[in-house]
Image (cartoon, helix red, strand yellow):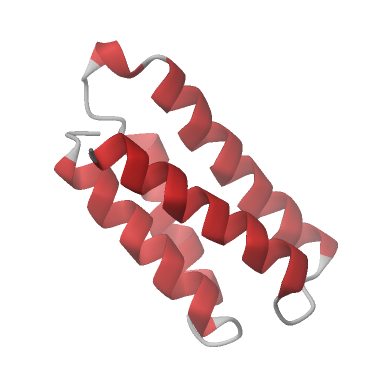
Length: 88
């Protein structure tokens, strides 16, 4: 169930990338990289080990987008919570 929830959140993030307030190329690239990292982690989900670099990356993105793109930051926070509940 958490995997499905995470997929939904990732789709919301992709939608925000397409439709939200303008992002710089650097911001867009950072969010796309996070999305790819999470998807890669889901593909090898059997590992079940915490991935501090992934969590740190999402956390940094939350801090980065908090003021300029609050809805994106909120989506990223939800993704962090889901990752934590999955033990990632």
